[in-house]
Image (cartoon, rainbow, N blue to C red):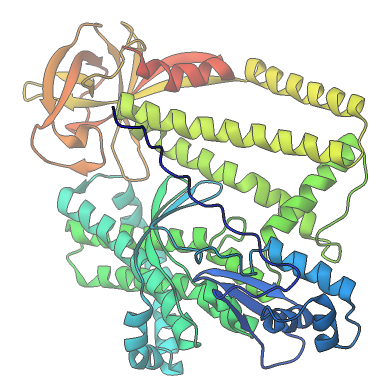
Length: 549
């Protein structure tokens, strides 16, 4: 019987030589050309650190031939062997010394906390370098004035066309127009990211990677422009951050202006207006400085404070902890009086962002049956996890800062009691979202996807029929559920998603309805009244019950 040979474990990386330190071969030190500007250390393709001039010169001197005494003599000034030793250990903690490991690799899939997953598709530096003459032409002042005029004129066009816009968002679009809107929004988002890389290239930097990402459950694109931290002027980094929003605003303005040149009675005018509105709203969200989007990068670059959001949130947490639990804390941004309210907003806004997305999509997710309920449940679990993690971090911060354990436990118990009281004391009306169809003989049926739960479908339940618009869903008529008995049926997609027309391809269960008046639309949304419940039961009724058979 052959001997069993176990695979050899991978060798652990060697510790760097701290007696004769050597800088990592995968580290580059960028010295600024102007005084009083931080030095930048680059590790690999996309990791950048800002350090002081003395530490930058020391890192350049680490060639492995001198010990701390020789380095102190080489550096001169106030450097001592002891201060060299402290600096060398700090550089080792940041993995900037040669320890025999491979360079940091950029993986195709990257998780960016708290809720972003990036999928790298390409490296755009060579493409953008070839396009430098075109980029230089587009950066001309006359082009900037023209494009800014288009972006502003588009807002005026939307205001003039407000009646047509309101009609467009209150009605389903034909399939081809709906796809055109989606492709237009997605296409401008991709161009948005190329704009970041183009402006970085124009200023002498190099974008490292581009790709697709899921940002707080929403699909988007990204371009890694961290090389912009090598630029010495904050104004240049602000331009890089705002380039994408600017390009999208121009595209939105062009779509709004183009709507005046199509048939006013046709579907394409409404599609162009909806596309313009969606892109403008994307610009507004991107400019919010409370999450890691373009507005935040621009603010951080303008103030020239790295990790601004993290430092402000730390100051906010320590302030809350000091008020609630006591203890002693040290501020990260003591000279910025606005840091605490800004940090509080940064802490709350991601929860608001996900909560708003779930609220907007809740009806659509319910109409998708079990799949939609699972997606909503995942988002809800994330919200609860973030809240729990925040409370835990708050308690740990208080304990490490010298707060009395009795006070920490007492305040935490009081907060838990308040949360429990809210879950039991707040009552909300629950609804279950489905679809409806009107048959050729005038019969009206409530339809739910095949496989979705039916526990909320009780005989004589009140049902509100609505138009299935993109953003607005005006009511059409009311009715009641005649029977809990259903029959299998195929219906068009317009019964569940905001598109018009189409063939009967979607398998559903149909329940008979009795309506006060025949709805004007052949398909649309049906909202079933599921009663009023405490908050905890409302969540279960709205998003757990549809999972049950």
